[in-house]
Amino acid sequence: MKEIGGYIELDTYILPRLHEEAVALNCGRNALAYLIEAKKIKKICLPFFLCDSVKKVCQKYGIHQRYYHITPEFKPIISSLDKDEWLYIVNFYGQVSNEYILELTKKYSHIILDQAQSYFTSPVEGIDTIYTCRKFFGVPDGAFLYTDSQIKREIPRDESFKRMNFILGRYERTASEFYEESYENNKFFENEPIKKMSKLTENLLHGLDYDRIKQTRTNNFRILKKRLNNINQISVSMIEGAYMYPLLIPDAALIKKRLLEHKVYIPTLWPNVLEEVNKDWLEWNYAKNILPIPCDQRYDFDDMNYIISLIEGGVKHE
Image (cartoon, one colour):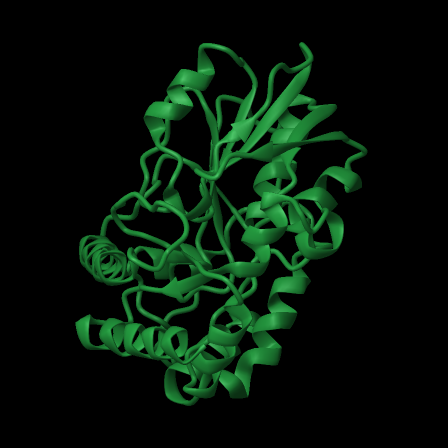
């Protein structure tokens, strides 16, 4: 029986949402798990430069894993695949273009594209593609999957209301007060089964101004690229709706520490890589010395210039 009256809950939002036609799931890891189950994947080829969450999903499902290196431009170095092997490609910082992916489809028929760092890049037709929401918006979970296959069994729906505290808390207080909760929320999904996206997350995603968000991220990325290009040791392409700006510099830890002292938080995106690969590999250098500089919709021209001044001051000092 429908409840009528009483106190008013969160409003229902009806603005257009990106990826409306995709399968809406609870997290990116389970978007991969969905593909493994739906397509009966048994073998996969992964980049060495990769977070351990993807590897853990593959281990959980008993998938045979093989690894490949990447070029300085983040593209895969691989000569061949087995007939039943899937190629897992990560669009690092949005630097791997759809045109390049289309070229790969001429050679490989089984490709999974991870767009966790490129939410605003359109899917490539016929390519199984994963998008995650938490890296771009203030939601505790959520992922979208483009695929031509479906799981036959019934999938339960997730609920998010108990995991909203750290997001609401940071809105009214400081990030440091709620960091532990944010960290625990990330760990929570390690053992979560495949679920449909929660009603709460779906609703929040219908309340966003995607055009404004995309434009703000683009403008901020452009400023960082223009000002930091002269010290960046990798060539970075201009992209729309960027995730973060990847700045590769020697002794990045010293600059990261300087930024932290001024409450500019720079994540270490793939700490597992530092323990899993040789120190003379490109992947180790990238994991150690790429600083992902924030450029999201919370910030503006003045914020970007402030970050740049801290970086330039640290580089000169060192």
